[in-house]
Length: 85
Image (cartoon, rainbow, N blue to C red):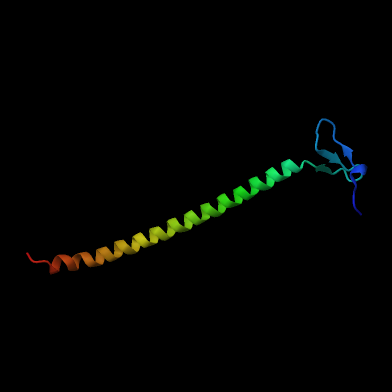
C-alpha cells in the first residue's frame, strides 16, 4: 500500500516535513537536504578510506625502516672489519 502526499499532513512551522496521521511517522520531503546529506556521507566515507590507507602506508613504512635498520646493523660490523687501518 503506497502512501500518497494527499494523505500526509504538513508539520506546523517545519516546511519540507510531512506526517503520516496513521503511523505518526514524519517524512522529510526536502530533496536538497537529502542530496546534501548524501554528499556529506560520501565525503565522510572517502575521508575514512583515505585515513585507513594512510595508516596502512604508515605501517608499511615503519616495517621498511625496521628492515633497513636491521640490514644496516648487520652490514656495519663487516664494513669496519674489511676497511684498512
